[in-house]
Image: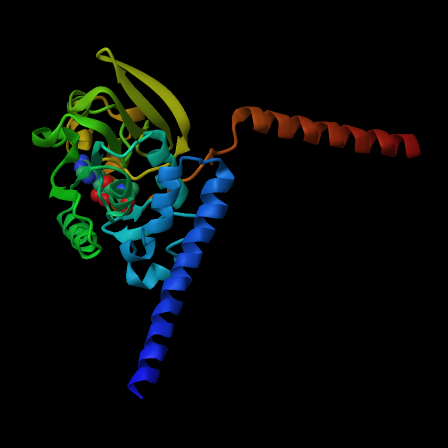
Length: 290
Ligand code: SAM
């Protein structure tokens, strides 16, 4: 009887593991490889990290879907492709120390931890920091340190870092994070208006100078704390005068999306022109028939 029970239990455990393993492989194939990500370390990390453990239980069936998911407190776990894109852009080799600003669920930190020597990650919402720390430790990630603080100021004691990743939108590169980045290091962030779309930007520090390149268009939740207080209290110019809206949108989960701009003026003009040509053609035909 015990043997039969053992076999049934093992079978059930394997079935459960297989379910997610298959979904993970599927996710990597359909969402990551097919979109051109080739970095083997990133791919292997995305296949390994059990993303379902980082999402709320009632959303586990969607854990490997091609979109971000809410994790509570108005925040999101990023879309798998964005996690892969940001990770691969850092061109990590394995011996690095990385700083992440915006721990959220802890998933991005786990993906990084699969690749590098140590990850320091900062989360401004205490409950999220606590939850991420628990999940990461339960999954056995000993090379991740979580801190509850405003990540705008970085984590100076453990710097300088080989790479810095900011996973919330901000309209400028926080100077403390630039100074905590090593010479030759890389920093990636969604740079731009935190209320609309941002440019996923890669910053490289060479000879003390910062060189930026545009990776993709994205939409992230805003970096809060000092980055926003400056705007609201008038310490810095609000982006397009939207300080009030920034405060209102605090609790709204925002999805990260690829290239989903509203219709550009050029497209509107083209559509109107096409409409005019079609109307002209119809009237012309009618008058010919008459
Ligand atoms: N990397 C996360 C993951 O894998 O789940 C997703 C990050 S979520 C898009 C952005 C996170 O940044 C939120 O959890 C938010 O609370 C956090 N955040 C916003 N402003 C912050 C700040 N100033 N310092 C640290 N964390 C911040």
